[in-house]
Amino acid sequence: MIAHVPILEPKSSAASEQILAYARNSVPRLRERAAEAERQRRLPESTIEEARAAGFFAALVPNHWGGGGVSFSTFLDASRYLAHGCTSSAWTLSFLALHSWLLCRFEPKFQMELFAKKPYALAPAALAPTGTAIAVDGGFRVTGRWEWGTGVLHADWIIVTASLADDPRSIRMYAIPIAEVVVDDVWYTAGMAATGSNAIIVKDVFVPSYHTLISRSPEPTPGQLLHVGTTLDYPVTVTLALVAATPALGAAEAAIEAFTERMKAKLVAYSGGAKQSDQASTHLRLGEAMAATRSAAVLWRQAMERLQRLAAGPAPQPVDELAAVRLAAADIVRLANTAINTLAAAAGASAGFLTSPLQRQLRDVQMMRGHVMFDWDRTAQLAGRLALGLPTTPADLL
Picture 1 (cartoon, one colour):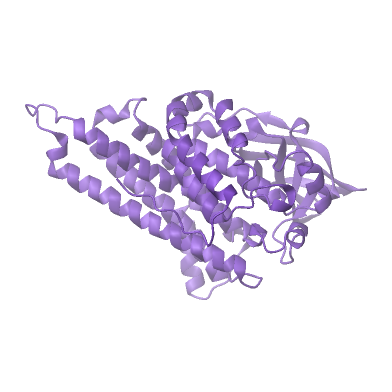
Picture 2 (cartoon, rainbow, N blue to C red):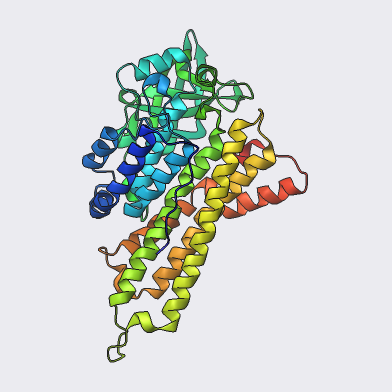
């Protein structure tokens, strides 16, 4: 079993302790609900309510609005724990919490509206600019379709990204109430089914200017100016990449635990009662999976430390440092996938039953690998290109 050693915090806080306790205690319940969540293609309401009651959705929201104001290291530790119970649940819960943090970058006037009654908003974010906006008096009219609306079935708001129809280089995020969008139920997938990542359709919806945020501006956002000295100084894109990669690490750790326990009881077929745990091949595959997962854990820790330095340093943040976090996030998912694949290949046909956690971990992490942030060829090429002194492009997602 791999010991999960949390990232050391500079100091403890009641909110941090509460978030970590919630995540640790949720593992058995998420594990019990994983099959049902997959069948429903969304998180059970009990899972949402437990996260809400624990303050998880407000974990990253600054104390200014009554949020937890916890560090990203605490938040990522919690996400890693949650994935020991269910990869899809950890991914969805973490994204919903992260997007409350993202909304804290918007105009203070909008934040006051959002957080007047509760210190979070459940707001899935579709950040690929696949929509268009037209500037009108007081705001914009937005139209488009966006894929991958993780957690949209639990949403209060939606954040979509669109370019101006007359200036494709002018890209903004637009926050829209869930009642004003259409959810297209398309999320029938082999993996990550419980995330409910359905498509979002917006048809000529008016969005006030103060409900928008310029995307990828070199200047501080309005929320950064309001929340000085908080986690709002973390770079958005690569922070998102590391948050998204964390459930893969937790899944690999959980797969090792499940495999180890299964092998202790499993007998080798047609062997006259030989134990699987006595087989050299079992030792080899388990050791390989442990090595890959431990490597992923080291990368994860180093990437978090790098993010902390970036947030504390001057803006704009160095491109090579941003790319290093992006590369680490993709490598974490790649290594986690390798570890789980290795275990699944050695676990025997019984691991394919829907009651086995290993088959779900395998399918979930394989699905995660398809995310644009974890495209290994694209990410590795970016790292190599920067090492040779070549320029970046907007498609590099830094």
